[in-house]
Amino acid sequence: MCGIAGFWRTEGRIEDDPAANAGRMAEAMRLRGPDDQGVWLSNDRRMVLSHRRLSILDTSSRGHQPMHSADGRQVIVYNGEIYNFRELRTDLEREGDRFSTGTDTEVILAAYRRFGVDCLHRFNGMFDFAIWDEDDQSLFLARDRFGVKPLLYLWQGGLLLFASEMKAIRAFDGLPALTLNVSAIRRYFYLTYLMPQDTVYKEIRQLDAGHFLVVKDGNCRCKRWYDLAPCYTDKIDSPAEGIQALRKTMEAAVRDRLVSDVPLGAFLSGGVDSSIVVGLMAKFSPKRVKTFTVGYNDAPVYDESAFARKVARHFGTEHSEIRLSLRDGIAVIPDALDYLDQPFGDSSCIPTYLISRETRKEVTVALSGDGGDEVFAGYSKYQAEAYVPYFRLIPGAVWITVRKLLANVPEGRQSRLHEYVRMLKKFLRADSTDQVTRHCALM
Image (cartoon, rainbow, N blue to C red):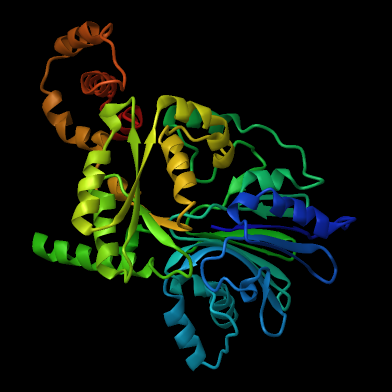
């Protein structure tokens, strides 16, 4: 994880000390990149790029950013990882390109020089980056297919500001006045997350997943470069064929993510998703895999550490278990919320912060099973949809009676019984015939 930031004054006054201003933006993201910091200015001092680095590939000073092309005509700041960069590098070398580092940053820059914005379709990874093109006098910002890496920007009065974090934008000296985005906040309280392009300020936007931004000649153009919908056109004829395709995809994904020049481990909950990831890591890693899990002393209903231990023993991992109490969670809420940068309504961010803090003492990179429940409908809100047609057969009067009976029944997360009551009440509230409305009520 790194942090990128920068600004471009396409018109108006030039900063008194643009390097210092960009330095403040980078410093606000120190935790994203504790290993190095860099700032670059254009000759006219209107375009400034800054970077905080967490070294993963080629940890030497050769990976310092902002990074220049060999002729100095293009400059990049980049956050993320391109998993197929070695293959791309080989292809580019066949075309005559030469490389002086072992970083994927240099490969991105070379691919842009050769293919322009179409380089994005060649990258397999998670990323955001900014490239200043001196020849074209343009700035190119891009975000990965699913928005794994964050990128925020402000475009107002001939000023473009961008950064990986809101804190970096707010650190800019001369920031235009910001107003709360009341509509976005209202949606947040309903959904418990911000919509893809929203931030808490009207003037600051998120660059949406699978989009890029080009600023040139005083104009700012945003365009989608990736759309999930038309990508899956291959027909799968049988469950066995689907299983084989999924296994092949998962193996490739995990194997690609094991490329690292720093210590690497995994978060292990004992559930299906993280267990599969750890199993594949054990299969492909030349070293014994380090795994980390959280156990809850006073919330047994959520304590899956016993399952994690079984998985760890099965795959022979070097396993660490971090025991937490309610008091531990409450103590770190201010820090966890600060690192989130924007409102986020999922309380799992608290244990995630705690396990990340402890894991960082032993490894720099940790794989996890995040995303599996969304892709394979693992959450109870998805499973509830399967029961909707049957519940529609129950007379309305019965629904009303059940609601009244449950109204005063205690709910919560302190036991499985309380959890079942909580889920049943939520399901009864989600009685809309509209699927979208029903899904939002089940969030």
